Each structure stands twice: as C-alpha cells, then as structure tokens.
Length: 166
Image (tube, rainbow, N blue to C red):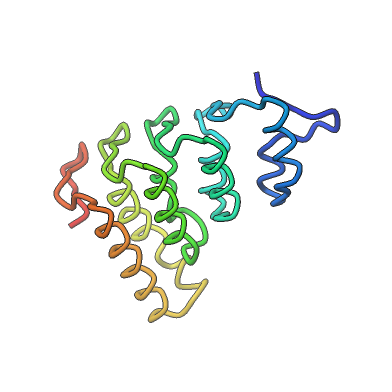
C-alpha cells in the first residue's frame, strides 16, 4: 500500500515540490523505499529522475533507494535519463552510477540506458533545440555520451530491433 500523510500528500508530491524536510518525515516514519506504486511500476526514484531533480535523486539514494529497481517495462531509473530537461541529466547519470546503477541493464526491448537515450534524443531533438541553441544541444549530447562511456556503457548491445547506440 502506498503511504500518505493526513493531508493526502504522498512522497511523490513532495518530490515534485522539492520538499525534502517532509520527505524526511516519511522516511523517519518507516516509509518503505523501492515501492512501485504507479501503474507502470515506477518508484519515487524513477519519478525523481524523470523530473530531472538531482537534489531529490541524491537524497533518495542516500536513504536507500535502489538505483537498479525496475518498472514493469524492466527500465531502471537510468533508462529515464534524457526524457525531460536534458541539461541536468549528466549529474543524475553520475549519481546513479556512483550508487551502483548497472549502466548496461536491459529493458523489455533490450535497450540499455545509452540506447534509450540515443532513441529519445533523436525523437525529441526539435524539442531540445527549443530549450537551447544548436551548439549547446550538441555539447550536451557529447557530455551525455562521454558520461555513459566513462561508466563503461557497452556501445555494441543491440535491442530486439537490432539497433545499437551506434
């Protein structure tokens, strides 16, 4: 069962609002980490990564959230990097990997986090370019790739469709 406060606040609401002091109260009252509560099996950590909130990601990892917890599509929080604000995800990739995330974990379609990032960056390229100039976008993509490679991402793993990050 998903934990709620008397005011109907859930930990995910606190994550969205960046209210760590209230999230700490949940944790101090035996809130269980790694509970998948959304229909697709996401945890609080998946949501914090999806929302590109590196402060909350760090906080959750420091308090025992599992960086390798999978949702129903077998995606770990690392698979969620690159889905929203691309400017802050390099820090999140580093955090997750420093806390033991498997950089080459496969989802249901055998996409690694790097493969997922490449697919998403191709699809959302026009949206990302609206967020920043073309040169900045290219710099961010290069930073992502270097970050994945620094943590030993395998560029040769192909998904079920035969696509690799190359």
